[in-house]
Length: 263
Picture 1 (cartoon, helix red, strand yellow):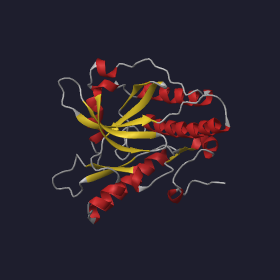
Picture 2 (cartoon, one colour):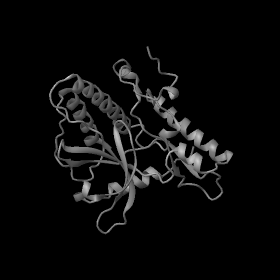
Picture 3 (cartoon, one colour):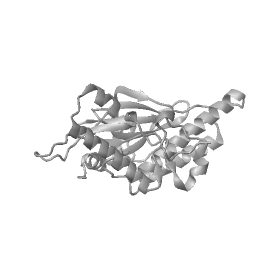
Picture 4 (spheres, helix red, strand yellow):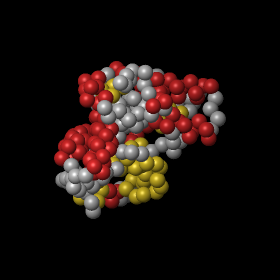
């Protein structure tokens, strides 16, 4: 399959950002629970080592794209002085501040742990050397801190924005011919295969977790117009630590991967 250059375009734009935009800001995050904080620090270590840092003043809110158990996602404008701005998707981590120990806070601790474990799964996929530039997998292109009165700092991920949205919404709004459907299905299959080759199961493959982009490298005589990219790796299962992940799997039941065996 011909490689799409969309991720290369995004990566090169961020690689050329000024020092003011990408200087890492020393910061700490605390939720009030030590186990939760430890997982959060693991997440931050991964993104610090693998992704450039974009400061929040270079991002301008445009609209809300959605929200889940682990993230809220916004469409935002990224731009540096003297450069043309462009849209990105910014995923901000949903966090709880926990004080004291009660049955209610214990339940919230467990919910927070599950969310953070899902976030850690996602950034592990983003950081995997064999998956970071795969044309059929969504990539993270930067990360950053957002000042927060409750937590001190709130981390976020910057992703390529898709004007076409998810495969679920795209297929409902636009009639797709057989050729486009075939290519999109093959893209999803290629993304799944890439994960499986790295001993990773996506865990929640469904139309809502596939994003559609324009096929930028299309030749004038080529029939395809779009490319599909697997997204949302929060429910990913890693062969090396499957037993530990088992209890925290939060995928959509009706879309459970056949590899998944629940007790």
